[in-house]
Length: 480
Image (cartoon, rainbow, N blue to C red; front, side):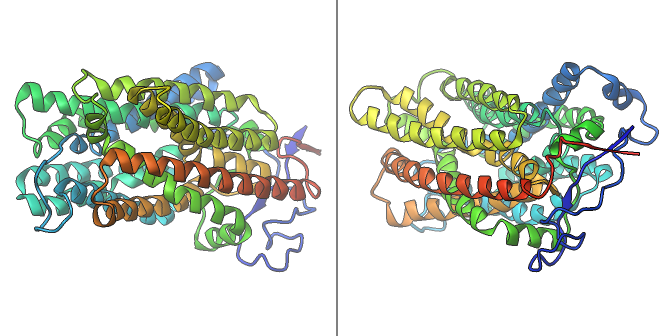
């Protein structure tokens, strides 16, 4: 007995909406080719072993090496933010030198996201590992130049360091999406950047304090420490086999998307994507502001001198997020799974607002406020980079890659981060970092609830319309 499932693929024009291959959004009456067990041609060694391994062993392997890969990447991205560069301004303007560094790196990172919309959507499997190593090599060159250059030219060096790093996430997600356990795998990956951000900052702080390395040279020193571990992690990550036939049947086939398919995706999901992108524009800015200026905010809260303070705040958040995201894999029905993702994200926004009210009422102290607003922000932020679009494709039966939607929102989000930080220094210069973050929390919480509720209704109705015309991906049709 062979099995096949009906699936749609993005192609050019969607206006006619006729049930044909030319229209990716209406179910075709033709039965797709039979789904045969997928196995890489001539797979040997670790890849062949993983194809036969029990699901738990596969998940541990995939989570472990994807976590390690992205954790190491953060050693090239975040340590510089430990330096405060106090009393220095960029080119004599009203912009703090640290703000110039933060914005410059984000501009490089944002440029990388825009490039990634095309590159990461189209990259072939055999190119991924080489691209991953290449991105880190370029970033490390930028960090070395950051140490060598005079203060004002360091802005260009940190831009170069950030320029390739924005593509690392999409390249890693390609290995994990489209599987029945994608929520679990992506949860492990998402945990990496939460704990890595604090860990590499603590390492950077130690390098400065205990080894006498300057703020300018510390980022490249930390980068050298993590270069070999990154290459080793990429090697083992690249041994993962592709999704199995059962994965494809339940979660829809994942394929590269060219410009025509990407445009069709945006047209079809336009209203829902506008709501998500508008919210993510400010959510990314909020997450980045809290992350990049945490040393300054903690100083205002009287917590900066506490040993390992970054990890004390962020590690409980990271593991709590891991548990929540992993729990989403319990939903086998993709419609309910998508609904659960939105409930988690909306809950995060409510938590941010309530915890700030509790701080104002002196019901909690600054430490717990930083923990709770971080947890709330990541409850909404993490799904954008992982399970939200994976479930969206599965529930609407669309063939493509979640990487495109991730990079579309990311590119917009990091643009928002640059704009908000410039706004703070140029138009809210009298506000401290803490005061700005406090007010920003209320704004993002309210906006988030509005946009997320609207987009949730939109995508659930979209999936419901499609199910009236076609079977669930998991409902295989027996053919002779």
